[in-house]
Image 1 (spheres, rainbow, N blue to C red):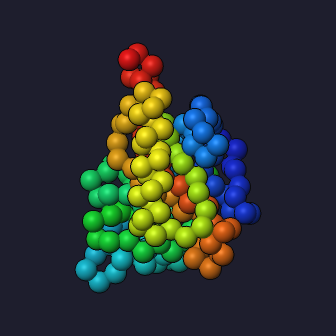
Image 2 (cartoon, helix red, strand yellow; image 1 turned 135 degrees about the horizontal axis):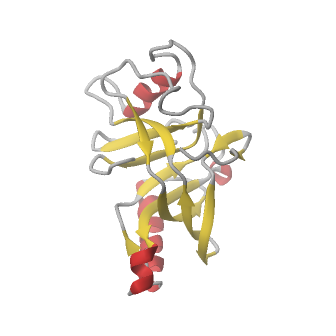
Image 3 (cartoon, rainbow, N blue to C red; image 1 turned 90 degrees about the horizontal axis):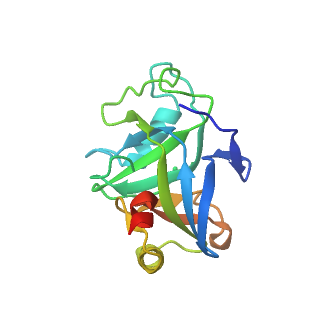
Length: 193
């Protein structure tokens, strides 16, 4: 795993990325390097957030607290991958906390719960739209539609399904929250069309 220098958002380590292209003031095409996360889709007793919170709070082979980064990523269960604040999700979605750059797949404590797993997220190129405020389903849908329209207008091909990334705790005032919808894109295929 190639480690970049850590980036920070509100004093919390966050996943570093490089901007490939800016499509609008709130829409970017980004490249993320490979990252390490811990993922769950929950189970019949607990939601994904609770299981992941338990992992970072010591439900792991070393019984230690595990540092994580922002954002928290929430996506559909069918995705290969699916960020430090509570996010409530349905059972059809997965949630992933990204671990800080001090961990790699060999040094990160292994989860002890069967519905939690360490995952290596391959390097990826995504389009992202950033917004703040409340984050109701209607907001997510509105921003997802705006992002997808911008990609169509710029002839950029999708390479997966949209997912949500949240950067702040639920106690942050809505106008100070950072939300993003991301979708994997294939810029090489887009540039040949």
